[in-house]
Image (cartoon, rainbow, N blue to C red):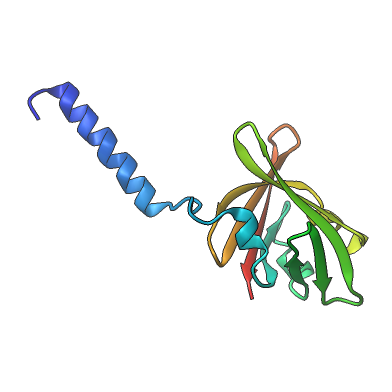
Length: 139
């Protein structure tokens, strides 16, 4: 490094590499649709104004390749639909359900991160004043 510009470039490059290593993003080799349709999932975290995870801890979600969802647990079986789309360059997951028991989950969620075992979703609403968090973990 011979001057300040080269030093700044080296620092920026190193910082980007470190952040990528610390905060892994989605695996570009495995499409989201392939991950979500593999196995069953449960809500390991749900936050809207407070931690409401316990409201959903008894449910298991199976995301089928045809865009339907089968939910077991609770008092009766629930069905739903799921679809992905891109909005402003971000991957979105739309969830709908046949029961009001899951109405808080029926949203367009931004996919923040996903791995083979965890799906991290976020919903910004209220003009950005309210952020909801939903995390599914594979059973």
